[in-house]
Image (cartoon, rainbow, N blue to C red; front, side, top):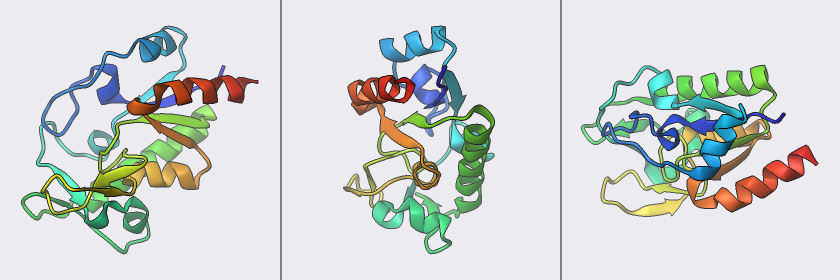
Length: 162
């Protein structure tokens, strides 16, 4: 059975930066009952507290964070890059441990966003890009979806299990 890495906030766990949550999603509830889900909040796994100050990446480019070209900064100017990279490395360890080939992560998160992110100005401006963990997973060959792409994720899982 194919395991799926899933953002803990999408499972109703209060790990968002503001202590909030997302969901429930019936598809995720079914996957959880089937024993498919490997939960992770990369930011909490990397050592950040809940709640925590909002963080963004300039131009929304998580891959550049991984390459050491950009930091992840909080709204207060604190550099939290190390925690974000550590969380991404923990995600990669789970991928290797469980043979994961697919992830369902939180849209527009500086860790998990898979298609767009905030631009680093804390103004709500969105740009094409991805979070640090999403970039690391994609580099490792993992298909990354957001909660806004549940139908596509379900189809991809069927294809993986062929």
